[in-house]
Length: 49
Image 1 (spheres, helix red, strand yellow):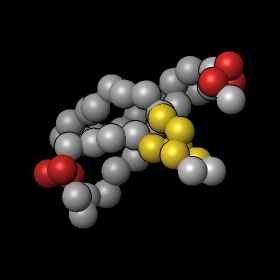
Image 2 (cartoon, rainbow, N blue to C red):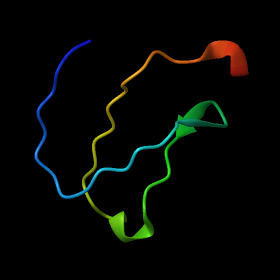
Image 3 (spheres, rainbow, N blue to C red):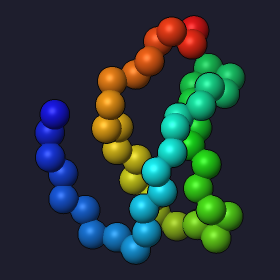
Image 4 (cartoon, rainbow, N blue to C red):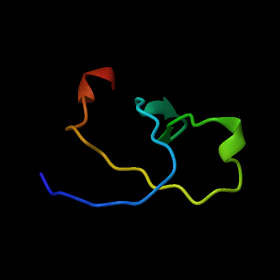
């Protein structure tokens, strides 16, 4: 695993959920229009396919 250093304001801990041909992660509505970064911290669980 690699290590990244980010400066930010808040962190949301969540799961990527299937949607169409991809996945999404919900963040608070107040984040609309903000620049966000998503970091994967575990291997994907492909049992859900």
